[in-house]
Amino acid sequence: MESLTSTTRLLKALGDETRLRLLHLLGLGELSVSDLMEVLNLGQSRTSTHLNLLKEVGLVKDRRAGRRSYYSLAAGDDSELLQQILDEHTKTPEFAADEAGFEALHRRRRDESKSYFDRVAATFGEQALPGRTWEGFARGALRLLPRARYVDLGVGDGLLTLMLAEVAESVTAVDLSGEMISQLRSRATRRGITNLEAVEAPIEALPLPAGSFDVAVLSQALHHADTPLKALQEAQRVLVPGGKILVLDLLAHGEEWVREQLHDQHLGFTEAALEDLLLTAGFAHVSVERAARDPQPPHFMTLLAIGTKS
Figure (cartoon, rainbow, N blue to C red):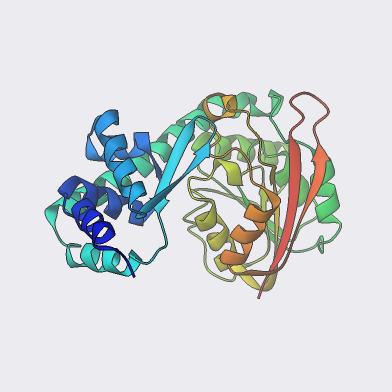
């Protein structure tokens, strides 16, 4: 049983409009201090003070990722009370404004990512990118039937997409960058490839019908996704029952420079985290293994993950 002091501190924490708005936003998804500052138009000191208080009473938790701290709601004995309070104020103007700010934040991130890939599309294949290795893909491709309907999510330089088109029944390539898509179409035309369709769209919201592909491929694309789980859920949606997913991505690392220089949203994934994402997205028979290590420093490691749509 909680003491009166604990209860009083909890009620005091919930008795502030700004802290309720912070809790509402964290209920929408994990956010950094700078994200919360942007949405609520608050200073860093004030935002951090409120978050520390909410953490002290057990309503939020944080995790470190490089130099950033990310906050989310904590699962505890007070979660039900908190959710009841937030639900009662869902229609308030303050919560509505914060939700609009949350969506604007994610739109800005997508626009920045799209702008980056549009700028580098023409020379993308010439860059040295972490985790670019065909050894990992080759090991995964051997486990899949080569003649199938593929959807390639996040095409990058398009080399993998074009290679798939040479053996597949059909390939649908999806990328956020219109310039990447344009470059891919030009390369496919030059090679005489006719079984490839290119679609400009975010991989978290595919404009594709459900159950229309046999294999989904995400090669070094998941760490660029704003919300990796949504990308995997969309891949699961467009696969036929029994369809396969192949994910190649970076093992978790600490190279912060990739955020600005390569527009990576995530610094790779641990084996356990990637497996959990695939299971949560609805895949079964999931396996994750280390596939290849880049020979050049900082020696990025590539993970290979495979799963099946139940």
